[in-house]
Amino acid sequence: MNNDVLLKVLMAIIVFGLVIVLSRYLPCSADSEEQRRRDLAAIARKLKLQFSPKSDFELAKKYSFLRWLRRGDINYVYNVFYGYHLGYPVTVFDYTFAAGKSDYYWSAFVLKMKTNFPDTIISHENMESRFAEELGKSHITFESAEFSHAFRVRSADKKFAFDVCHSRMIEYLLANQDLTIEIRGPAVAVLFEDWLRPEKVEGNLARLIEIRKLLPEYLFTNA
Picture 1 (cartoon, rainbow, N blue to C red):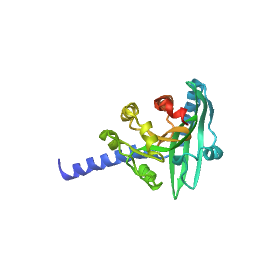
Picture 2 (picture 1 turned 60 degrees about the vertical axis):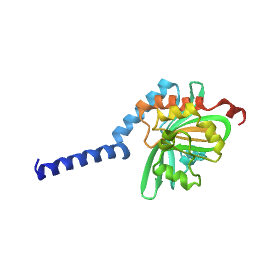
Picture 3 (picture 1 turned 45 degrees about the horizontal axis):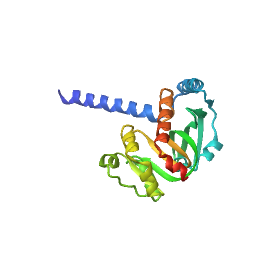
Picture 4 (picture 1 turned 90 degrees about the vertical axis):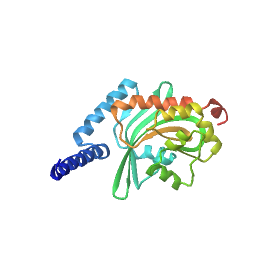
């Protein structure tokens, strides 16, 4: 293979990679966004949840007690699902915030509880976990080297973090390494650095509820 052909192959690989990255992080086109909204509304009907596509600044403020959703100069939620799923009160939404000249697109699955749990974040070793370090919490090391390598756990209460990250929870998280979790006050939230994907909403709701079920019941007795 001569140098010209090799160069063309390398350029094709680079362009393909950029297309994949941009398709994930850039906002949808108007047409595809409208289709996504219709698909989300259909999922809401299937799950018997209320749905509103409108931008909502007040709801963003309501959930700003979650540190993960307290960022940027301007933030709001939209494509909001709310109601009861499998017996649990849930709220699901797209979340956008602006920081400097950049816009960021996340989605959140939140389950409300009658608790007042300490702030605990289970995330990954990346920019977002370094953000958590800026909050003044060093990560907690667990006996499972695999878990400590895959996740960074930070908590205002170290004992609570160990109570949450028991062996079954660790096993579940190792099998679901795309999850970012925050537990704080009356809520447990699962967060994704991506807008809501209609085909993933039901599955991610199921994972949120599984996380709730894995929280030891004695934590609720003492809450």
